[in-house]
Length: 142
Image (cartoon, rainbow, N blue to C red; front, side, top):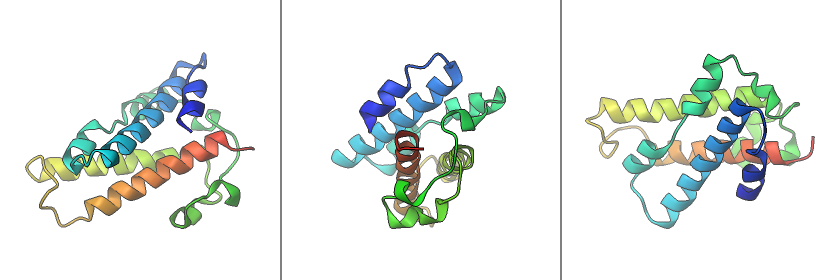
């Protein structure tokens, strides 16, 4: 999947390229963090949604990432079944929202999520699976 995202990031559309690179980089962060037992605080610091914010600011149409909607064959994890019928724009919005929420929770609690009441590990896991779904959707057939 990461190889596919690398190839897709070589487009002439700068905003599309930035968003795809950010998705790839965020998925790499999750992969390496889980392999190396990195703390949620560090993961949250490393996750980025700057390219998404820049694309929104420039009125980028996220449907340019991929037309159509998520179909059942894109969904490889049961928890993502609720996203069937969503398009790239709606899913990117949800990814952006969750990254922002995690960063805000961390800031609100002394720059650490260690003692928060929110289930941060579940929030991070759900974010990972949303981003993986987005990557699978971008990679998969129309």
